[in-house]
Structures are given as structure tokens and as C-alpha cells.
Length: 96
Image 1 (cartoon, rainbow, N blue to C red):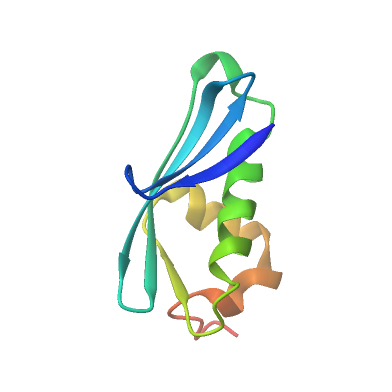
Image 2: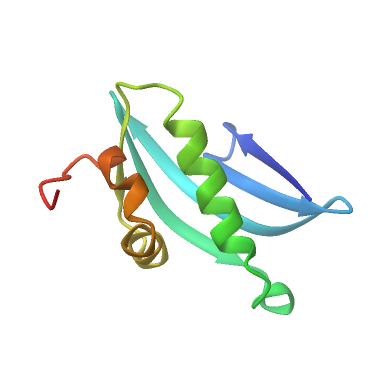
């Protein structure tokens, strides 16, 4: 499994054997990253690929301590709800 960030396509990509199985689209503005859309190939669903991809992206984004995340994708919002340890990375973390 290989996860890369494609700046050309504004997305993170999860590949296996050269095939893209999942993507996570983003938009960046200033010190904010909007995680806008996640997609997993239907034949690959149920394997936890989207969760793996989101966690990788969140960790990559958190490498810049001034950067914050706004999850506009429903899947990503749900992922953050299940992973409160990353809540401090959200642009609006007033739920703390």
C-alpha cells in the first residue's frame, strides 16, 4: 500500500500494485486545509482504506503546527468524531 499527495490533482491517493483504490480531495487556503471529498473504489470498500487515507492526510497536515483542518466531507467529519485525539487540529475545535 502506498499513499501519496498529488498536488496536481489536489488529493491524496492510496494505491496498491499501481492502482488507485481510494482518494481524498482537499483545498488549501492560507493555513487551512479543507478535506472535501473521499472516494473508495466500490470493489475495495470494507477494507478500511478510507480511514487509513484520512489518518495519513491528517498526520501529514499536522506536520505544520500552524495549519488547521476543516472537514467538509461527511466521511471525514465522522472520522474525526471517532478520533477525538485529533480534534485539536480542527479549525473550530470549540468542542474541547
